[in-house]
Image (cartoon, rainbow, N blue to C red; front, side):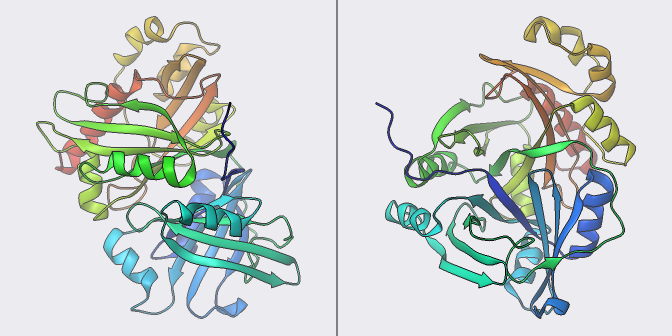
Length: 365
């Protein structure tokens, strides 16, 4: 008999970044990724501590927050990590119950349950600590009709570039330290009721020089997937070690955003200046033998350097951007699933080699 899901999650409500310049960050995601202006919080809304801009594309909401004074916790986070993800907010039916269920199983409360009210209704929020300085908020907005959260107002902007077809957050990858992957996989299993979707060891994900290990944790309905990566021994410094060195600890490495037409989406992103990892043409010489028949023509995929992989239920198409900030930390994945629910193993070698080329240019390999 299937066990009852004690923490029903209905999706990713929003992802909040702490950044040095919230307006410039929001403008970048508008112009480069096609996000639309949604909400604002700052001096004009009565917030004299921080400034936040919120952008949205379909079901993906991103928040960019900057401090307004020195010595703040937000500023300290930016000073240590650079621009990075602080909050992964998850949509729940009962924020108080979500907090009680997770804390009773060993989570550390980072935000007590609160019910916040304004003229648009009542929003419930609570939160727990995750890896590094990352936190999870549990948001119940069923009784709230405001533009985003209480304290925010609609961001009126005349700058609204077209969307590029991004639909929802497919998964979010966390990098943790040496020998910490199993600790955090257990955390998501015990504390949040996730199950392991798939795991990869250093034999699966390695090149001649570097390696990593990964476990993909998923909630009951599959809407939330958190792969957890840790470094593995290799001849040279892996991408995970590079991330940990520059982020100065565990954190969110990349966010995968789903599209229903990856060729169209990636074409638009490239036209807007988004840079992707280079995949050698040789990858495409044997890929069809490995993945079998697909609906798409291979040539446009090859031209755009889109990777193809398969699991037991179907195939997927994916591509990875270069890091979007000065530190080689946060980047993005664009993914289209054609039946595949999980992740295949075939792309990792190509991905690693592409990342190693960039590491070599940076002198961090």
